[in-house]
Image (cartoon, rainbow, N blue to C red; front, side, top):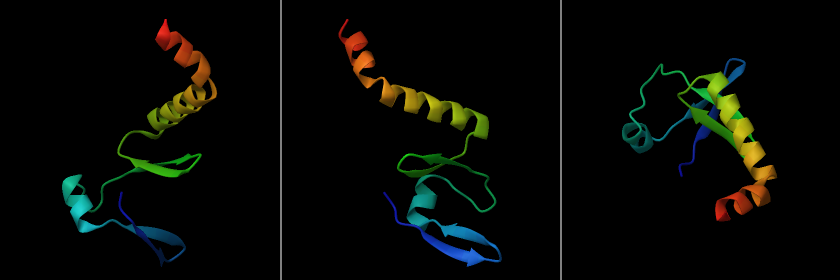
Length: 75
């Protein structure tokens, strides 16, 4: 886990990613990310927004039906 810093630039906020994390994840300036809001905060991904929305919906469904999924896993 890494701690990031938000800074105000004009009417927007920018996020500073630590250099060691950027190197490990092969990040570079100008790369586009999709921010997906989750129950616990945000997730930044390099995938498409549509795919991330679909994955978030699957995660919500899995959490709400965890008991059913656990029963199916035992079968």
